[in-house]
Length: 403
Figure 1 (cartoon, rainbow, N blue to C red):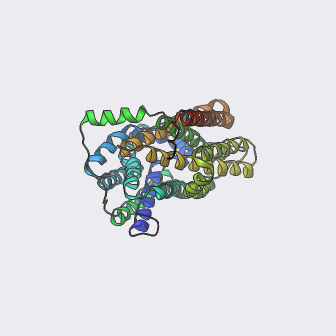
Figure 2 (cartoon, rainbow, N blue to C red; figure 1 turned 90 degrees about the vertical axis):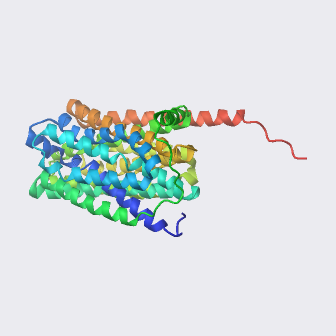
Figure 3 (tube, rainbow, N blue to C red; figure 1 turned 30 degrees about the horizontal axis):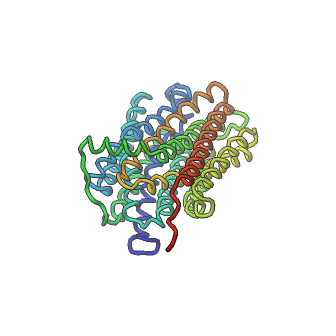
């Protein structure tokens, strides 16, 4: 498929809705952490596990789910994953304790694991290479819309009716997205079933992990998500405390800055075209780091500006790195994407937990410090990639003279 061609618009909208449902469900408790802390009487570091458990479950199960998609098909696995995730989402509002809530969220994250890797593998098989970055950018844009709308809706609903009703509303919205996704997504035309044999899977995974470029891309995705997970897990606590003392509905509306991520992700293809992959990663990392430093000010407009820069940089970096994985892997694309998604969501879990711990120990400055260290890691890995590319170019054999 190509932009403007048969089925492309339906496919793009279907995967956009899948991205909306995935991020809305995955982070449905993130904007509500102060309320969850209050109801169950737990600190931020403990309440943050309702986010970390979901992303951790996804990270652990994304590789097995990708193997199932190689055998049973991308569309089948994505449909089943959404069905289970939305079913669990309708149970989350009835959790009687923080422990039960964390367990339900872990199961929900494990179910959602069938979406990210299968979606990028589907796109790599069904979309022409020149349109791949743009197509994946639209899927990532759906993630940003889901993350934004989920947090904004939960913030305002929770202010009136509490956090339980708000996560229930997200569950109902996700049901609608899941049904529309299944009705709209075109049947794959280029999928060839693979093997479920563990040895074949292990050999494919070892091959991907032996590739230095893929390893760097996995680490870059994890580090970007460490920043993002830490910032958005803690920001609710910062804005509900002094000197801001904002109500829950207003705090939820802060997540409208995700719209910036929608734009930056969907334009990642043009960014790579102008700057190259490494240039785009430098720009994304610099933008994220600048946002972190700006957000240190005790001024609400500057905090908002910082969040805008962090969000734009993160989504651009994520779209560039994830599309590079799909282009680099010439076989076992689902496993290559699954390894990226696993690293990415491990970064989210680490960021949520470590960012909350840093906030508990040193306030917002501690969370920003964790983020800056992660971005330094992104820059270091990109520099190493540039150096490796120069060495490979020098070692490449000279073209044969024309006769």
